[in-house]
Image (cartoon, rainbow, N blue to C red; front, side, top):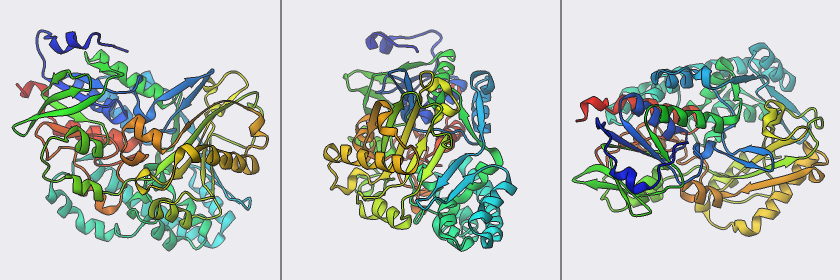
Length: 515
C-alpha cells in the first residue's frame, strides 16, 4: 500500500503533466469505488482514512492467527463489481474469487423450527410449506412483489442520481402503485399468515440498518435479489476485496494516506477547494468526495459552512440506524465440531416485532437478543489456524443517541448473555474453546468509524429518508463536493455503497474538462 511520507512533500508535489486532483475522504468500500471511478476519469486521486488499512466497515483485524472480517460477510449482485472493475479497464475475476453459498443462511427459532434460505425456488417453496403449507401461494405472490421492486428500486432508482426534486415527482405514481408507504413487515404480513415466515421474509432491512416495521416495503427487493443472483463469499473476505480496490487505485497513479484524518473540508465562495488534516496541513483539490458518514460530513467536516438544507437542526431530527454489539472470537480445535452450523446462521429471540420496538423506538437494551452468526472458516479455511474456527456474532442494539446504556458496564454482561444463547442453541461447549476475542460496542462504531450515535449503517432508510429525501450524492452545501457511502443515495449495504460510486461517476465531469 502506498504510504506518502512526509505529507509536506506530497502536498507540495507538482507532477508533470498536472492532472486535476480529487480527494476522497474515507477508504470505505464506497470511497474506494469512488476513487476507482475518478481515476478512470483521469483524476489524480488521493484517498485519506484514519484507519491503518482500507475497507472501513469492510476491513479486518488479524489476531493470533485469526482473521476477523469486521463488517460485510457476503457479496450479492456480482455484476456491480464486475462493472466497476471494467470501468477501470480491469477484470474483477482476475483479482477476486467468489464462492457461491447455497444455502445462503439458516434461520432458527427457540422452539427448534428451522428455515433454510436458498436459491432454488422449488426448494425455497418447500421450506415455506414445511412451516406453513397455507402460505405457499402467498410466498409466490411475495416473490413476484419483490421482483417488481428490485427492477424499479434497485436497477432504476438505485443506479442514478435522485438529487433533483423532479426526480422524485416523476416516480411518485410508481411509489404509490408499489405501496412504498407500507412497511416491509406489513407487506410480509399481507402475504404470510405464519408469524415465523413473516420474520423470515421481512428481516432483511436489518442488514442495512432499517427497522422492518417502519422502513418502506421497497426493501423487500432483497428476496428477489438473493434468489436471482445468489449469495457469494469473497475468498479472503471483503477486506481482501478492499485491498484489491486499493491496488487498482495505485495502479491508476492514485495514493492512499492511511492513519490520517481529515478535520475540515475547505470551502471558499461556496466551492469546496480542499481539505485540512487534523495535523493542520491543507490539501487542495478540484473535486472532493466524502465517504465519511453524511452526518459527520455536514456536522463536523463542514462545521464552519452555513447550511441550506443539512442544518444542525435537521441533522438532530434525522433518524439513524440501530447500532451493533459484535463479538469476534477464535476457537481452538473446533473445525470438526458443530457440524450442523454452516457459514451463516440467524438465531431468533422469542420476540420479533416487540424486540424491534425496543431497539429502534424505545432505545432499550433488552434482555433477549437475536443473533447473526458468521462462521467463515467452513468456506475459507484461511481465516483461522488449521483445525480452528473464526466467528463473529452480531446483535442489533440501540444506538447511543437514545442514551441510558453505559457500555463499559454492560459489555461483559451482554457478552455473557450472548455466550449463554450460543451455548444453549447453537454451539454447546463454546466457552471452553475460545482462544482469542475482540468486542465492538456502539462506542466502537462511534470512535472507529466516526459514526454519529455509533450507528451501524448511518441514516435509517425510512421512506422520508430515502431517494430524494436522503443526503444527495452531489452536495447542495458546496459546489464540487460529492457524497458516497451508506448515508447517501441509494443507501447502505455493500451493493448500495458500490452503487453510490456508480452514481458519482455519472455526476463528476471527466478530468480533461475540468481545467
